[in-house]
Length: 368
Image (cartoon, rainbow, N blue to C red; front, side, top):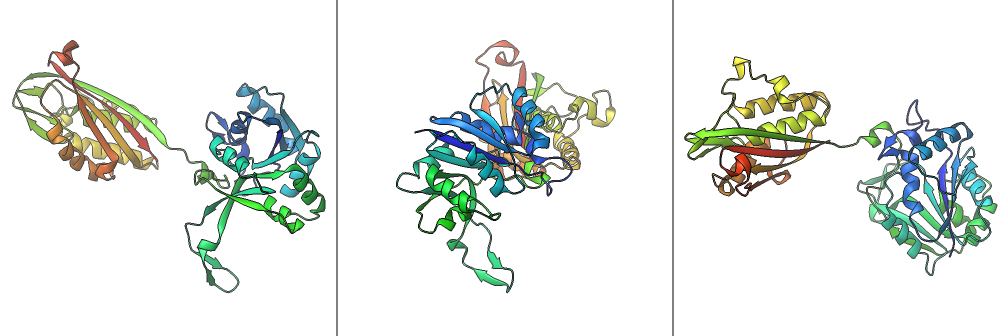
């Protein structure tokens, strides 16, 4: 079974702004290239036709070249004044041996191969297959403010799949611009359309805010230990026979979290914000410093999504104190304790940490 893929990318992104959304950064490339990639790994795909506006064809070729995609199955066709015309142009360029056609929006960069395969499988016994997701919001008919039962409606995604002969006949009859491929197929009347459960992540990029990407950051801190009465970790004082040698309170997990947040937003590390030669931070409470770092993150328009911390120490025993650490960090980070992961391990008596001479922590954060 030969499969032809049509990527509808003929628009000029008038709602997105000045730039064409299809070439906005996404993944390791741009929106359009990321939308193409998953189809190249599907068995049976013999042709991938990209309907693109002529003024953007060079930009697309450069984006493909940048990703080192040199696939002989890929060809460009001229995008039309409407989506319907773009798809019609691509259908006319399909090789004769193509039996099944997949049509996908070039502005959907997060499509997965799993969704593509499920859509193809749904064609067994059907003329076409449409991908839908349920509406999360209530639906209102605008002309008379009449509420509608949202359980009876689905939001359409792509890819759309159809048998070649059915698709050709439908688009041959399509004289006007239609909303989508389903509305074109429905003009044939008696066709069997299978429904496929979609993917909430498979969004269509329409506005600049649709492409806001989460940021990740990692941090590390280590402090030497000396004889003392206890250490502060995660904002919690833990009595033991040691104390950290530090300018502030030596709270290594909090210091690691702060560095992770700062690096995620492209800032310098905590040594720049809280210099060790500044007496203002002598013995400082690290939770107070974390509050200041959170202000930096918010000024960058970011908030914490989740935090993962690993503390490395031979002693003291940390497991009984982890919940208290989460409770101390939660209100400052602005997330629930379920979004804070803290684990503790030893260094298996290796190096200074293993000898009980130091304590360290790694932290990873997700900002959104």
